Every structure is written in C-alpha cells, then in structure tokens.
Image (cartoon, rainbow, N blue to C red; front, side, top):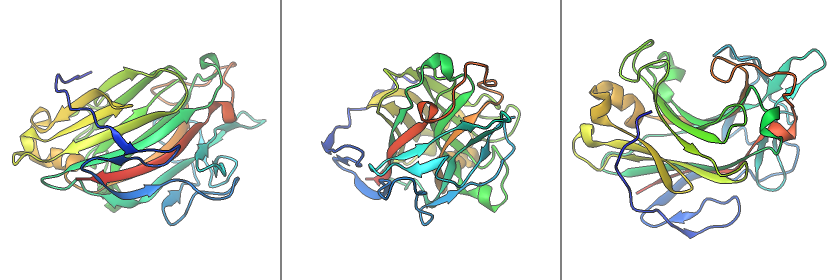
Length: 283
C-alpha cells in the first residue's frame, strides 16, 4: 500500500439530507443520481447501462441480470444491488455502468462520491461477496484494453470484512506503472456496515502533471493518494486523471481476490450493497 503524508483541509458539507448529494464550499454539483422512483423498478436506463450477462472477468461466479430482483430502486431514494444463489448454486447479481462520463478539468479539482451501506448479514456469512464503487476510462468502450484504459477504484471490500480499499490500475499487465495485477492501493477501517461516504478528488490545479494527484476519502478522512510523479509517465497518468471516466456500481461473487463462497455464505438483502446517491462536482 502507498499511503501519502499529504493532508487536505477538511471538506465540510454546507447542506446535507439523507441520501442527497451535499453542497460543498467551492464546488458546483454537475451530475448526480439520487435513485428516486418506485420500489422494485430498475434504475434509470437514461443514466445507466444495466448489465445483463456474465462478463467473464476475474474468475467471478455471478451472472449479472437486468432485473429488479438483482438491482432495484428501493422506493426510498436508494439503489439496492442484491446477490442471489439459486437452487443449482448458481449466483446472479447486479451491475450498472453510467452513460454519463466526466473528465477531470485542467486547473480544477474534481470530486466524485457516493453514500453506501452494506446488508446486515454477519461477516461470517459474506465469504466471496465483493461490492464495489469505481471508475473506468471511457476508452475501454472504444477498444482500449485493460489496464491501459485506466481504472480508479473508489471503494471495494471483500468477504464482509470492515476494510475499504482504494486503488488505481493502469498501463500494462503484468507489472508496469501500477504494479499489475495488484495496482497502487490504500486501505481504511470501516466503522460498521452502515452508511459511509466514499470520495475521490482529482486535483489538477498544478501546471505540472507530475504534481497532480488523486486522493481517496471515507467520511472525509483521507486514506490514500497517488501522484503523477509516482506514475512517472505522462500518457499513463492521463488515462487516470485527464481523460473521460464513467461510474460503475456492482456486487461480484467469488473471484481471484475474495475467493469463493462457502457453506456459510448467505445471499439476499443481507449481502447487498445499497447506494444513496452518486455525484460529480467540480471547482
């Protein structure tokens, strides 16, 4: 893990309400989804591509379904992504990818965040459950491969453990500027399975890309930072911090990192990820 000694001033909300994007001093809200709508319906297809297939990555088990059973509006202005296991022990779950893209602006700070909680199943019942809130470079939709497209993982956690991870993936596999497949990451203890705010700020206020940085926060507490000079390649840094990115929300099951579910792993709402909002701001 690469933890920076840089400390930012606390960013305090001027106005906040449950599951609504706060207002932050110096920032303008450019886009958000607050997941309003009737219960047991899909999220907006204008905002999201709702994945409906097995995407065949990381040796994961789940097939994603565009079905409210796996991914639904709660009716209380939240999104619920729920993994299920059928009678043949096959897993299904939900994944959405934003149609909206954003590019961190030169000379500006770009803030993206979501408010997220996890289902109430005991940690001992979550082996193999892998929720995530993350970004991919839009270029992957145009044919650029992974990890050259750039990936910024804002929050991942595995197996129900109360540790949140923030990571970048980039350049080439294996090795490269991001030490693939591990990536460049940091971690933080999560206080509980309840609501937490997960945020990344892209700071491009420097005139030198080497001094630009990406910083991770949980509830305003910094836990990771990556700088341009650590990547040490202008083109690779651009894939992470200077080119269009899109949001992804998903709950995977099994795979190379968490390992596979065991006999104690429970499906259903107790193993879900629930999202109050996703938002993009800029100075």
